[in-house]
Image (cartoon, rainbow, N blue to C red):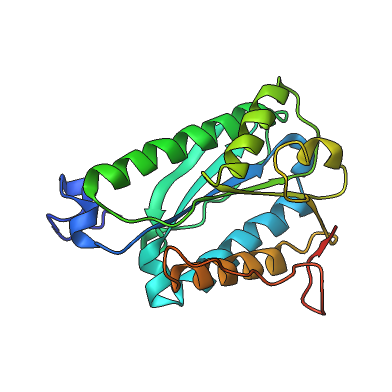
Length: 230
């Protein structure tokens, strides 16, 4: 059934300027998600449910919904499923398992996507918070990942973005720790729902702060709501 979309000249799909529609500061986050064949079945089912939880949690906060921008990149193969859009327009994609684990290529694509988006913000005069890259994987890279890991770690240390790495059972944490100076976290079982509740809560806190503020994130490894193991 065809649904007519009301005309709104400020929306990008009608040739308008998204920043005229919504001039709020932006908090960009790239979700970098492993959907390789080993994620098939229950792991991917739980990851999909976690994404839907993430959408609901952020959309319940009117300011975060206007400030947090989400992009979703999956690997393997590397695909940009969702380019940057504010949470009020974000719809969690339905992930399907396929391919191997080209983690290096995926991280490189995420960094380029962020650089392009930051250039757009600057061109439009839009203020933005420090971006996030949030990587989730259950495996080991199957491509040439080491140069990208070194570049990602350097960019993280230079505060160009904050890089978070989360591994499920089967992930190589030695490799994950090469991408960032922040310790990679091990997910408790398949508790993606709690992970995404923590992530959405953290992004809400950031979006309600001043851009120059340093936000102290809650420890994901402590308490009954802890979803991670160091």
